Image 1: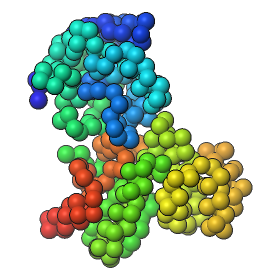
Image 2: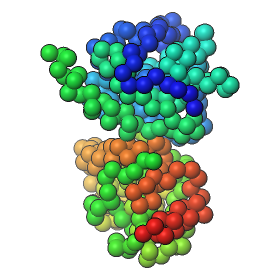
Image 3: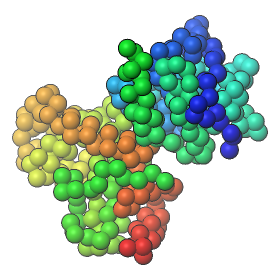
Image 4: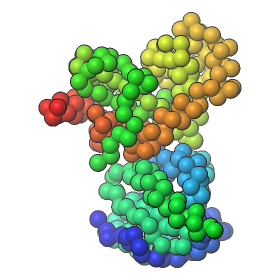
Length: 162
Length: 176
């Protein structure tokens, strides 16, 4: 498994397509917690895959004021079809060109396979990684770790909002 | 290793001997085809262990991908409020291919329950909090899809064919 960036590291900034004609930069989301969820590919052949689960848990993430971004090496058109099919209500970023460049910055790229790990990062309001976790590629990591990390952030998050 | 954060209590829907030494818990979605298949496997597991096993079911509807999962879960809870949870649970899975509101109403009538009462409960979202509570307890415990089983308080990862579940439960018993 890859050596992913750990707690305390500044989250590398990036700008990636979020739709075929729009881009999103991590820096734009500064001031609120961000969940970055790298996953191998769209169209996992199971019910309740990782992105579908996060979609259902979305109200809980929002309760913590957090934004979630899914990232894979799939292209923006593929993401659009996948998000529409699964009714996803959060952005999927296309780490497509140069392929996997953002995953590499986070230490979450699988060179031999050409796609990313199932790696999760919770980034605090100041852009510092406060929690990260890399799951075996075949195992959906669930959402429990993310929620615990967001809860741990909450007191600090509130004080930084004055 | 994910563990169950909210223990099984008498508040849960429990089938079988309440004092059994073994507990199998499923987080399931009535519209999920994998849960439909697991339904039959669980019946076999129950037959295998008899009074040594209690089985509990909690709702984990993936409502964004399964249009009827939430309504089905609330219907089962409605029947549960009238002491008929397991009959409705079984009927829904046995008719999973036709899952939609008319089926749920027909099943409610089949059990001799008040169909208008069901409609009112669905409209008012009377059982929504209960279903959400189940769902969130699952999220907290590392449920990552459906079906997810817990053997005792440990999440059962990997295949859940009859032999896998029997082996996991026997191993649990050896530990106890």
